[in-house]
Image 1: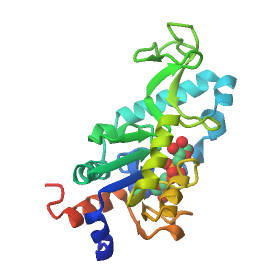
Image 2 (image 1 turned 45 degrees about the vertical axis):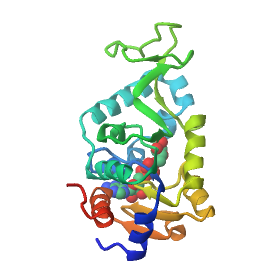
Image 3 (image 1 turned 90 degrees about the horizontal axis):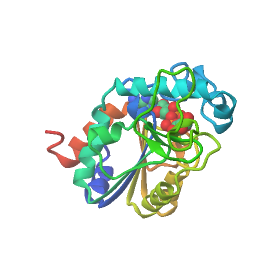
Image 4 (image 1 turned 90 degrees about the vertical axis):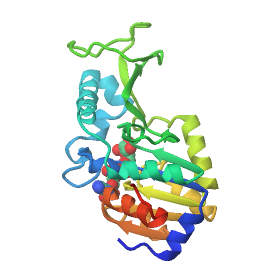
Length: 248
Ligand code: APR
């Protein structure tokens, strides 16, 4: 892929870069996105039936089992070249912030360090009553496992629809978007708030905004550079193009 020389110059000189990622970045690892027609999870399941506090109150076992199924799927995959390219970029740029909507933990496994998990992490579990985190729980019981401390139902440490994002992570993400010189939106449909507002916050502060996505999104008309294709192919090429020695 050819990258405009103007863009390469921007990125080469940039010392503050913020990146927002979504499910598209993990698609080439074998994980389904949410809104891709047919293959997206929301094409098969209704988010309101599975990813909301109301759904958990209504049928905790259904919700618990769905996240357990997703957790097993995530344990069976590895980061892809897109994840590793972002790890490389972090080594080359002095202030690099990776904001992710993904709960799969693949960025961390790939070696990224400065990560803000805006929607939580599916590999973590906490009590729905007292909030206590636990590393271990009994998965083969008929009902949802319970908190050893208060006997409350355990739940995945992810942000459900209608719940607020973790305050510290959101504040840090907004700050990174507002102070970066280059903002990347990668593998996200850009329709879910508050994450979708970050690119606009960066743009309003005069940052160069870049989209890397398999298809155009509502953000596309607003960006300075848009590269449509697979992030696992585009990102390694970009790293090679900007930092010459690439991923050797
Ligand atoms: N490379 C780049 N982009 C890709 C790839 C790929 N290999 N495969 C798919 N995409 C793009 C799709 O075209 C789509 O625009 O990734 C985007 C994924 O969008 P969504 O499925 O809407 O996922 P995301 O934006 O992360 O969803 C945001 O919504 O359901 C909630 O909490 C959930 O974090 C999630 C949030």
